[in-house]
Amino acid sequence: MKASAGSPLGRIYRLLLKAFGPQGWWPVTPRGARVPVYTPRFYGPRTGAEMAEICAGAILTQNTAWTNVEKALAGLHGAGPLSPEGVASCPLPRLAALIRPSGYYRQKARRLKELFARVRREHPEGLERWFRSGTAERLRRELLSYRGVGPETADSIVLYAAGLPSFVIDAYTRRIGVRLGLARGGDYDRWKVLFEAGLPRRAEIYNEYHALLVRLAKDFCRKNSPLCGDCPLRLECDHAGRRKDHGKDRSSARPGRIQKSPRRR
Ligand code: SF4
Image 1 (cartoon, rainbow, N blue to C red):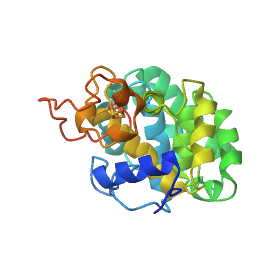
Image 2: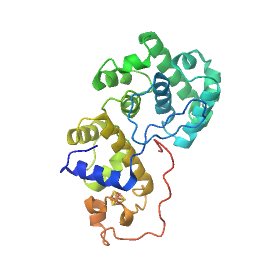
Image 3: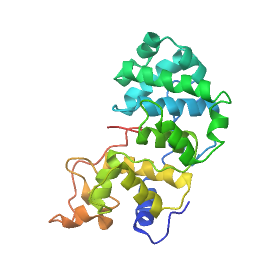
């Protein structure tokens, strides 16, 4: 899988992929299991059940760590098959109790119920047929009209559930992008345009790229005291280049294995 050969974004992608390998996003729960698993080099298509779980995960992961989402998803799976019908018909207090580990659980329960109730009402053909019937832009626009679905959640659903090309931006992407010198700042849409304009329009590349940036942020490009000396991007990075030691510090604190997480804020 190649990103644009000579572009800065292409070089960054290749360095990250070489350092970390395919990340296997978005993790979903195999039948009979309770915990989502990562499947490197699988880029879809997803089943309807997997799509429903990714939609739920994209809501549950708002403002919380992925470990909490895993517990909430385990609660939902324990109550029966995770489907639009099941969530939409679940009484709100019970749904809130099931997803309590995810934090903001009353608000998220309302959002989940509304999302899946509306899907049932407006898309009786089901998630699979809905997601496969249109473009990334059309699906994104529609999702953004749902309460509680902002750009990051919408893009996560479009990219990881529907398998359509829509680059996901998060706080990690912006932090790394600013430090690398890709841009000084800007809003969600500015970053999205920057990445999408610089990469081939392919869902597999967007999928892997976002996951690799999250991995980089957790293992090296931390908010405080980034571990530039060992970072695979140190030779591409403005921030590392500006440091007196040119980012060649060898931190004694080696990053641990990535916490299995599509999100952690
Ligand atoms: S070199 Fe340092 S600042 Fe640059 S991306 Fe790596 S960890 Fe972040």
